[in-house]
Image 1 (spheres, one colour):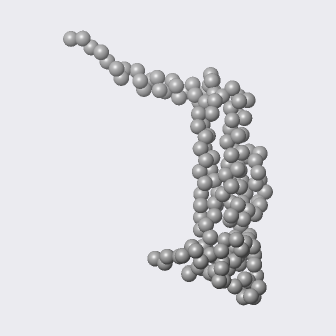
Image 2: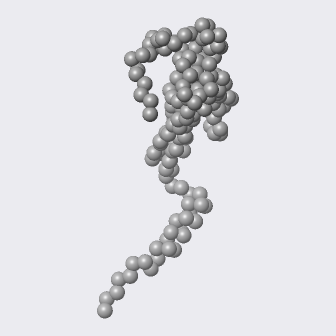
Image 3: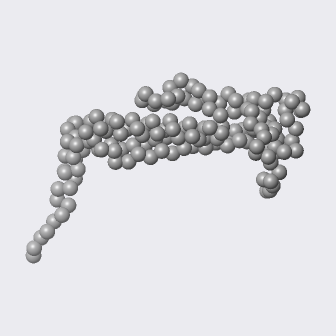
Length: 163
């Protein structure tokens, strides 16, 4: 396991201290603000990574939220942008519950992280929002059938006999 000395890096500049800028090495900078150091076992540095430059995010739900069409997010901004997007889904759940007279029982957001196979940078790859809404007087046929099936299975389970 290699131990990296963090004090060797200068976070105030786009390139690590002691590492040449891409102009000096003749390489193309695709992701400004990233280091030009190539990690062991990787094809490129984060500054030169074509995969990170072309990564796009798109929402697959049927709700009106951001990212309905594919859009690029930088790896540095991916966490906050995906979190904000998932919050839109939570807000939609509260709006839907309020319109139908329901109550949001739970709303949870989970973010998925990944590592870029080309440069090794970590980024938020996507997210999932799960909500549970309870509506009063659920009179749909599925609920009625479930309740009658539950009642039929409970009949006779408690038996009190006197001898």
